[in-house]
Image (cartoon, rainbow, N blue to C red):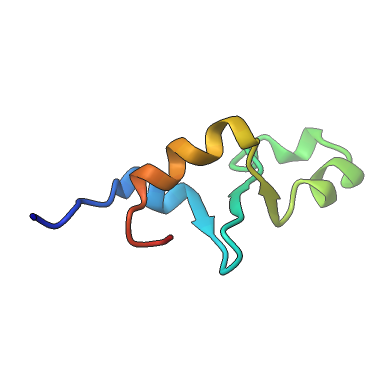
Length: 66
């Protein structure tokens, strides 16, 4: 059986924890941040849990991170 290929675009955007949680970073953080309030900027830091409907699809694209 051949090796499975990891989808590199997904690998850059998501990470899977030891307990199989799929995490993604918050979007809209690249530029135009001067218009946002400090609260909005602070809350968009860090990682978020991915919705369960997308979790299975992401795990299939990252075969060796499971």
